[in-house]
Image (cartoon, rainbow over all chains, first blue to last red; front, side, top):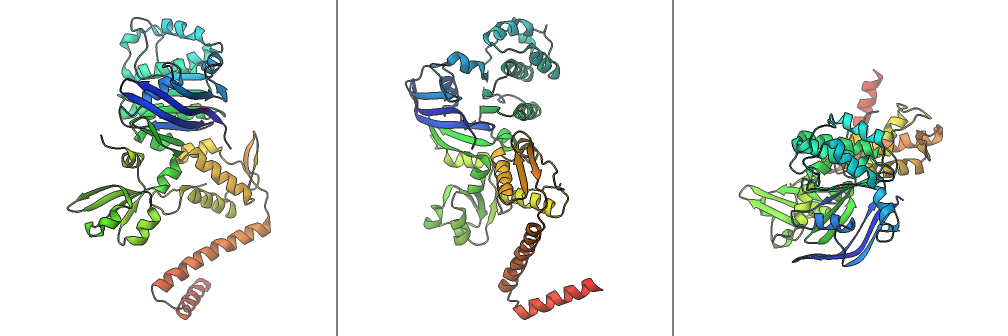
Length: 285
Length: 126
């Protein structure tokens, strides 16, 4: 089976009133893993903690089978990172920014860098402050992928971008994955981006992992059921994770597809979206 | 090769993909020794998980339809006539049992079904 590129075990991190509790999950090599959850669920805290940008309170973090604390340099050379908030110096040109980042990696490849710059139509003498949001994201990806990283980690790379650029980003990810042994881990609250590209999905809610599963299996295990309100009673309500009723009928998400089919007649069964499933598990606050 | 996936289908995605690749091999649209797309590019094109396409190839390999060579890719296995024939029969049997299930729920008995088949055969002969 596929090797794990990242294994997180019982990770604990307290940050003010928020905490990550006993976080355990792993990423498979060769997979695009989507990290989903609503705002404030702990996605950014998790990413920053596994990258060592926040000190962890407890637990272990292993990249490529190696402990993060003891092999930080070696590991960081094999990871490309794109974080949500711009960590660029606005007054610099792209070229100047690159010359700050490049020396941090032993395997920086200038030809790969120039390749991406051309592909994305970026101008090296342009100031960072003049880049549009989409261009900024493309430049961040260029910097993250120019040192032959095996694992690309991104925090909300698509937020604030229009659908066209989001789609372009997904194509870039799929291109990156064509090479064997590459993996991507990215967080998003825009789950539609993941419908096309994700292999695995991890849902975090209130600092806890809810599921870590293959996307196709997850969506096959759940169903969106629609039907007449007369079918809903004290007993049948329990078959649903989330149920919404209007005067015209009901709509619900279930993980007991077989039981629902057995007990309810004249219903419509549809494949749920990732968002449908996510909302079924997220607790309201 | 054509692969069309139904999102509303009760059949899981891996089963739909597997059946359609198998069909293409049985109809010899995919010829012996022909290279199949990589699990990643198949997953990208069909918008399914690479874990799903991996499972499809693993099962097709187990059933003898394809072979996978590490570092080279997956190829249609050399023809095994007996196996092909068996699979073709199996496909027809599956359809027939679906027909019988349907006939039964609609209250059509064995004799009626036989005579329906006879009419179809006669029409085909003409």
